[in-house]
Amino acid sequence: MIYTRNLHKSFGNQHVLRGLDIEIKANTITCIMGGSGSGKSVFMKCLIGLLQPDAGEIIIDGQSIIGKPMKVLNEVRKKIGMLFQDAALFDDMNVFENVAFPLVEHTQTPDDEIQDRVIAKLQEVGLENIEHKLPSELSGGMRKRVGLARALMLDPKIVFFDEPTTGLDPIMTSQIGDLILQTHQRYDVTFIIINHDVNLSYKVAEEIVMFDQGVVADRAAPKDLIHSNHPFVHKFLQAHLEMEKYR
Image (cartoon, rainbow, N blue to C red; front, side):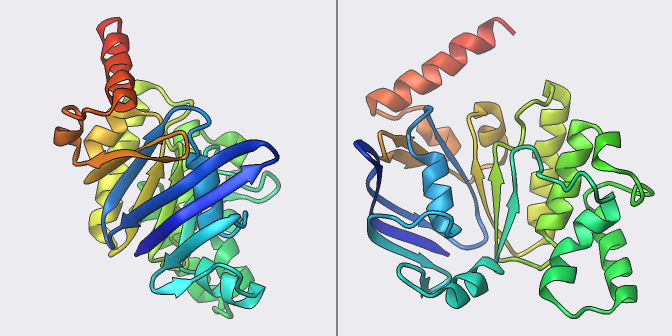
């Protein structure tokens, strides 16, 4: 579904992506992890066209997006749903308007069909009878669920999750993990999760890709990653285990 080769991106003297090669299979859940500044967010922004790499190739669902006109990029973007770290809901819109937004902006869907589809999507993420609430009236976990419902409205082939458990307590974090797994089973979609949460990654990922200094340090199934010989991966996971001792 996603393929990059020799991807480079710099900001002045800061070389963030340093020849990144990655292949993500269709209909899988892939977690991308790494330290701060390892290139995770820049990689994601390159994939959705918010940043142009300095060199390299990006192919999404068989379509190269490097150097393509905005019309082509917009068509590729319609295949992608995005759940932002803070859900990025529009504060002045209620839940219904937020979830309906992609349909209103990008399709000619009749109002009655929009109504039905919004209610159905909210039910699928475990929410009912909140359509008229504002984002400020929702808990952090509920906002994440509304954001996921909105991300799925155009039936994307790919959904990006940007730090989906940031700011959530352990119980809600576990529930978000369950929601990711349940939603993935329901849809024929590729999930890519950018995060620092080792517990979440081990719970949901079919493969974990570890970034270090702008390249792939290692990639493996969760059960195999613990045996990585890469120094950074070993240090990252050991630090997590140390933190778990004091929980």
